[in-house]
Length: 253
Ligand code: 5GP
Image 1 (cartoon, protein in one colour):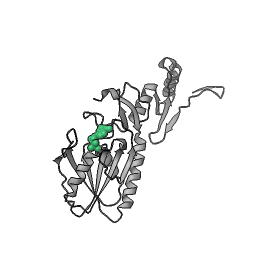
Image 2: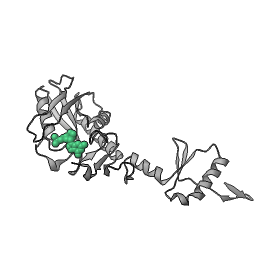
Image 3: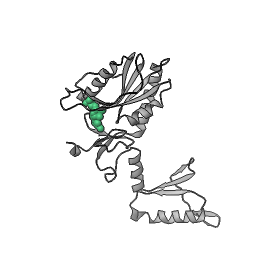
Image 4: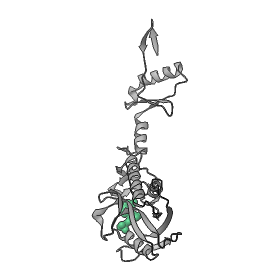
């Protein structure tokens, strides 16, 4: 940025160049009081080379990006109710891709009907179906959760629209906890006499299982903690987080 008698006396080398965006990125995690020199260089750079796209990300911006894409540590002022990220967005996408490929191999020559149980499953089923290469149908059902002791059956709030008689059903679940919901849903779908029912779940909280339901595909086994994100809620919040996180214990009843 400065020369003296043909020699460069001041230069600026941003940390990254993003070719797709034609953008240079300068990352600074210093305290803002220590960035005066960098700010001066950024100003000079923009003056001398107005055609160069360059952005400076400060610590706050950097933490916000980490949180947005599910890499810890979350800065507490962004999602204060979250204790920690359990499964990052990248890990979710990678594992869902693997499951989709495995399901496609297992169902080669068949035409499965994917049935998702609303609402927690929305992110998982919509990502999973895009990794399934065999022809397949998708349907959704909604149920009310069982009451207290688990003795009462689930109530169907929205039934499936597809006729599944004689067809291969792949039931897609967000999380299997005690297993009671899944058990009831399988019993209900069996009355429609499909050729087969297999179960694919995003999360398996095996430690809490009461009813032993066979799971054919499990993306992640998780410990006994209440999780949110990637479709899963707590009082309808957090479904929009692109990662799975553990909710702070003190928020739970
Ligand atoms: P189960 O009948 O297996 O005990 O419970 C399954 C249902 O309970 C799930 O479909 C989900 O709605 C809810 N659930 C169980 N554990 C969790 C959790 O850790 N987080 C959230 N958000 N929901 C859960």
